[in-house]
Image (cartoon, rainbow, N blue to C red; front, side):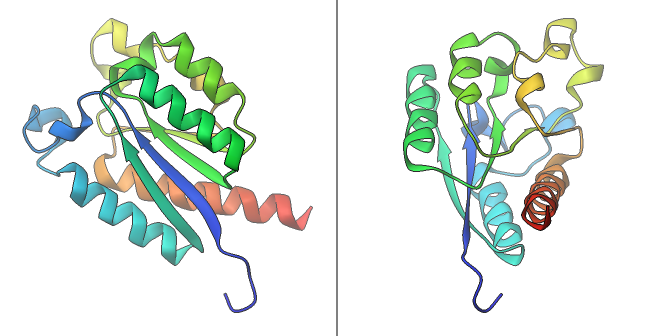
Length: 155
């Protein structure tokens, strides 16, 4: 990586994800949010990214963080809005302004859960979607975003 500029990857976690490790382990496992973030930071570094993490349980703050990313720029974004995935058009509209590739990631297999969880209002904005792979799904998203960026840079 000598001579290459380090890229910025944002990791955005939404509502209730701070309760990982306490939420239903059948869906979410025992992993805590700090453990998950440490994993993503390390995986991102191995792929040439500096990862910046943000969590909030407040939808407006989540949107404001996306606005900051739009203003300041980023090379890639991984987003897990939690339940907001299924109905927050405010988050969808904010993500629509992000110029970097976006990965939508969910720890649980949302497609096999309750009907309301099967719809994502942000899906069409995501270059990468991963669900049901737990922590490893985040690693898959980091790798897919890094590969996508590398492909675009070669074009």
